[in-house]
Structures are given as C-alpha cells and as structure tokens.
Image 1 (cartoon, rainbow over the protein chains, first blue to last red):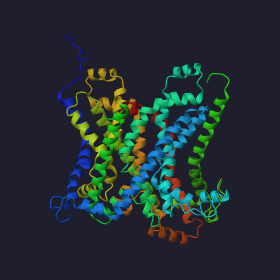
Image 2: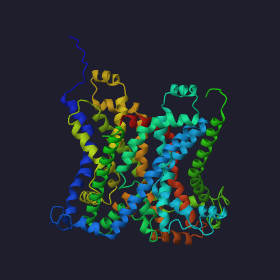
Image 3: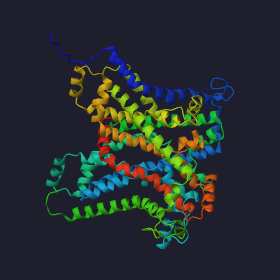
Image 4: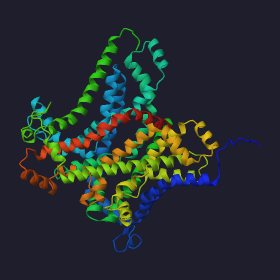
Length: 308
Length: 294
C-alpha cells in the first residue's frame, strides 16, 4: 500500500495558492491597463468633467477630423516619423557593427571593460542625458571649443537653438546611449557559435574578415530580423522621441523637435482637452499595431522569421 | 588563441577593433568624468572654464551644499524610497505571477497570458490612465510611484524562461514532503534564481530611479518630488533656481549654480554606476535565457 505519488498534488487548495500568486499581477493589469481602456470612449464624445465618462454627447470622429486639420499635429507627425526613421536606420545598425567589432578584440579584459562601460548610458536617466547635452553642446561648451580649436568651424554651432540640427542631434544621442546596450544580445549570439566552424573556415583558408562576413553575420541574422520588426512597431511612439522633445525642445527648435507624445501631453494635461488628447493617443496606438502586424507579415513573406 | 603566427590581416583587424572600441569608450566615459571633475572643483574658479582633465582647485564644497539643500535631501530620500519599495514589490509580484504561469495545472492560464500580451501592444493612453489615477485618489499619493508598475509582462517572460530551466526534480521531492507551491517558490525557486532576480531588479530599479514623468505630471506636492524633477528645475530658470540663488547669495559661498548642478548630477549618476557592474555578470546570462526562449 505504499503507492508513491508521482504526480503533483492537483487538489483545489493548491490551485487556490497558484491563483493567489497570480492575483496581484492580475489586479495590476486590470486596474492600470484595462480600466483605462474603457476611457477610450471619450475620444468619440463631447466630453466635459460634469457629465463624466458615460455622459456627454457622441460626436463620432469629430476629434479626429480636427486633429488631421491641425497644423501642429502635422508638425508633430512629421517630426515623429522623421526622427524615428533616422533612428531606425542609424541606431539599429550601430549595435550590430559594434558587436562584430567587440568580438574581434584580442584582449579579453579590455573587451569586458569596454562592454561594461558602453552599456552604462542605457541606464542613465534622460534628465541626466539632457543636462549633459546642454553642457557639452553649449555655444561656449567643450564640443564647440574643439571644433573651433581644430579650425573646423569659425563660429560656434548653435546645436540646441538651430532647428536644422535637432533630428541629427536626437539620433546622435540615441547612438551614444544605446549602442553598447544593443550590442549585448548580438555579442551573446556570436559567442555561442560553435568553435569547430571557425576551425573549418581556417582550414579552408578564410581570413578574419571573411569569417566575420560568412559566419558571424549569418549567426545573428535571425535576431536582427526580430528586433527590426519590434522596432518598426514602435516608429510612431519612437522610444526616446518624447524625452528629447520634452527635455531638449525649446522655443527656437520647436518646428523640428515637437513630437506626437508631446502633442498629446500638451493638449491633455496642460490644456485639459481630455477627449481630444485621447483621440490622438488612440490614433497612435492603432498605427503602431498596424505597423507591427504589417512588419511581421512582411518578415514572414521574406524569410519565414516572425514573432507571432 | 593558438600560438600561430598572426597574418597581417589579423593584425589589421585587431588594431582596428581596439581603436574603434577606444573611441567608443572615450565618448562614453569622458562626459561622466567631466561632470565628476567639475563637481569637485571650486565653483567660483570653475566659472572661468577650461577644466578638462583634473580639478584645478579641489573642493568638496559643492557636495556639502547639495546635502544642505532641504529639498535636494527630500528629493534624494523620495527617489531612494520609491526605488526600494517599488523594486521589491514589483519583483515579488512579477516573479510570483511568472511562477504560477509556468505550472501546467494553473487554471485560466491561456486567458491570463492573452490579457498580458495585449497590454504589450495596446493601451488606453495617457488621459484615461490619468482619470483612473484620479478616481483612485492616487494623484499626489506616494503609491502612484508603486502600484501602476507592479507588473511588466516583458519581465514576467524573462522570469518564466528562467524558471522553466530549473530541473524538475527540485520540486518533485518537495511535493512529496507535502510542500505547497508558495513554500517551494520562496524556499527553493527564488534562492536558485538569483541571476534573473538581480537582472529584473536592476531593470525595475533603474526605471524607478530615472523616471521623471510620474512626479512631473501626477504629483504636485513638494514633499513627494524626486531627484529627476529637481534636476529638471536646476536646468531651467524656475523659482527653485532663484530660491537656490538667494540661498547661495546669503551664504557667501564659492558654490555657483553651475557647480551645484554638476554635484547634483553626479549624485544621481553614482548609485547606478556602482550597482550596475555588480549585477552585470548576471544579466547577460539572464537576458540570454530570456531572449532565446521568449
């Protein structure tokens, strides 16, 4: 009669414990993610505080019509897409390149230090990055000092008040902040490559550059694809766009620094046009979903790597 | 590395890799170093500029001033409080949920996962969230820092990936001894999952420490403001800045607005700089398991 219980207890008391373990997370999702979704209805309403969420007149797509006719919305949309696109090209490829470079460093200790140090900016607050930017790119700052010292420019460059510089500045900041962090995942994939493949390549007489091209790069192709899809999905939000727009935007560079995230905030929390701002947010959410699905579908068509 | 003679191609690649990496290292480290040396320099002296490599007139005055400013202290304390409480709570909630989700016999598992996945790609947006926070009386409440960020699905996925890797035999014997899942989670799983716990703690903690959005827009009480908001004020010409200016004026000190800014900057950079290398060796492993599985 000594039957060993091989199976886990599937009693309801144990089920209760499991359900209790997931409960706090579930409540968080329901309250802070799902409850707000009901608030989306006000995007289609003539909302005012007295009527509350469920009062107010339905006005269909009026807010969206107003939005598409708004000059500032056009500016914000143009800047969002422009900045995101530049970042997608530059800051997406830089980590790949950096990972390939890191992998070729012959000195193990130096390699580790480089990795540690270049990953650090990813963890810095954007407030700090914005402050550093202002200090370094000031007309009397160190960068202008170097440029003039080397005779590259005769006048100080107004990085932060000249609108034509803002997009490239935004992309450069992303490059500074995220290259090291982005390289981690690629480097891990390259490190995982079986050494026998390298031996075989060596026997065949392949040099270092050919090895990089024919072994290292193919090894990370899948990872590149997946990350690319996820990045395309976030074009309309653009990770650092809001931070840059809010912290580095000013009266002078407004034309090129004003983005959708700021537009929502501006209309919603600053001007109290709640319903209108909700409509803007909804527009962003829908576009990002469509982009994500489209990118995923495209990737599937191209080479069968997809994330869903 | 085998002791084979290096070809000239090898040498060229080696040199190029080291040089390019050096450029990256300098570009990353120098701005932070610049902040440090300027914060350690006498304020009045620093005003004449040209401090590039080491402090010209060494002084700790700026730092003592940072710790004399009442609202800098409050901000620092509030940042620390929110980071510690928020991180412990979020890691606990997320890890427990992840553990439950890796159990085959959890009921409604598919539903829970579907609910979580949707939130990764779709949200109500800023204003509806603002309404919910308002209804729950979370605006101007310390809990607004903690509650909304208790659960992040991406972190949950990393936990799940790690828990699945743990050998099944671990639980088997515990189950036989009649242990329940809560006991197993706290006594067996968590102690074995330090790499992933450290990784997620770092991610969550950094988010809390760096966040300026929540205190800027959901908090108006002075006593609840955190360090990033104070840094923003030091940046812009606001009342706070004039306040400090007056304070400095009355005290005949050699601290300037500039040098105070450098010191505050460094105080906010330091904790991350110290903690992050300790956790780093874990998180490459933690991330890897997650990225392969997720």
